[in-house]
Length: 155
Image 1 (cartoon, rainbow, N blue to C red):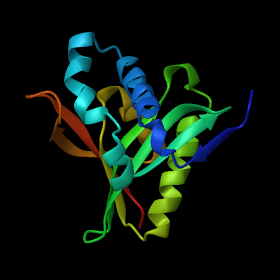
Image 2: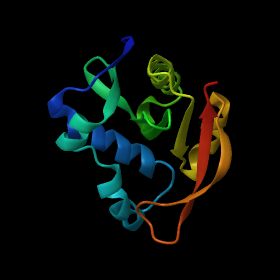
Image 3: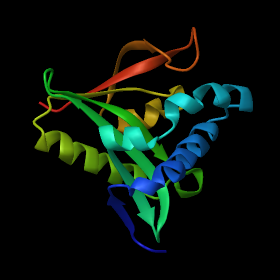
């Protein structure tokens, strides 16, 4: 097994990143109709790669995890837009490596809090990282669906 590197993605890796994200999401038990509604919101596009801070987990040249942090300098907060590990690579510490990268960047940027809209299946994972549920937020893909809104305080 090769060591896993966390790095910034290459411009031509948007499709690979999207594939990891969609495979990870679907592994939570979602069917084709549900997934079709999520594709636009979850996809990594070349434009999004330019506008947002992404990192990938790389094992032997294969993208096996994706995360994205969007910062709001005015509020001193950051939103985690993507946090996904390929189902074939879960339980190998990749999520922790991605989290440590986000945490280091957030501290570097003097952010005071991080927040995210969690998939219900991921709440327990985020709680192990120190996130707390602070409310609910509407799904960006499924009308009428609400997601747990979670927060991590850095100070």
